[in-house]
Amino acid sequence: MKIVIGSDHGGYELKLEIIKHLTERGFEVKDIGCDSPASCDYPIYAKAAVKEIQSGDAELGILICGTGIGMSMAANKEDGIRAALCHDVFSAKATREHNDANILCMGARVIGPGLAELVVDTFLDTPFSNDERHVRRISLYS
Ligand code: RB5
Image (cartoon, protein in one colour):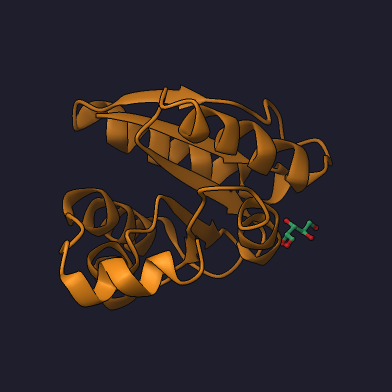
C-alpha cells in the first residue's frame, strides 16, 4: 500500500519518525514535504498530499502539524477527502470503519511518538466496514 505523508514545521520531527516506522513495516511512503523544521504554511502540504490521493497515486495519507487541526481543516476542503484528526486508537479504528477516512491528521504538540505510531498502525490496518448505513451516511456529505 502506498502512503502519502506531509507536515509543516510543527510536525516535521514526528513525520520523520513515522516515515521510519512505516518504511520498516514495508509500506511505500511518499513524503511531499516540508523538508526542514523551518517555519512554513501547512495548507501547502495538505493540498499536495490531497492531490496524491485524488489522483489515486496514494491510497491513504498522513498529515502532521502542531495540533493537526489546521491540516484537517485544509484537507477537508478538498473533493473526495475525509480527513480525521485522531490522537487515540479508538478514534483511528472507528474513523476507518465508519467514515472510510482517507487521511489521518495528528498534532505533534499533542501526541508523543509512541502513541502516534500505534494510532498510525491502527488507521492503516483497519478496513472500511462497507456497512450500508456507513456508505449511506458518507454519501450524504460527499
Ligand atoms: C504552527 O505554529 C501551527 O499553527 C500549525 O502547526 C498547526 O498547529 C495549525 O493548525
